[in-house]
Amino acid sequence: MRIADYHLFWLAENEDFWYRANQAPVGVPARRDVTGGSGSFVGSELDLTVTWTACKYTKVQGGYSHFFAGDFVRDTTGTNNGKDDADFLYVQTTLSF
Figure (cartoon, rainbow, N blue to C red):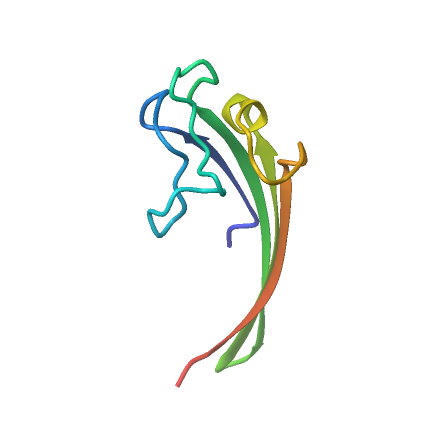
């Protein structure tokens, strides 16, 4: 059982856009430093998860994640007014047949 994960995120190049999972650039306007001066470190994320087996066919999983903004995120203009750390909370159920 995995309870905690830790991830580090970088841009491919200092002048690159920051992309979402669907390959669309993040932000409006998109976050990018054409000079490369903001570096390539996007940030890190800590994920905490708990899974409970309710019965033979049902599992319930809950999780919390915190994204710690890196230099690139803090130094580029975005729509978050300087509040670039982020928190995520979820609950999901898996039914097996």
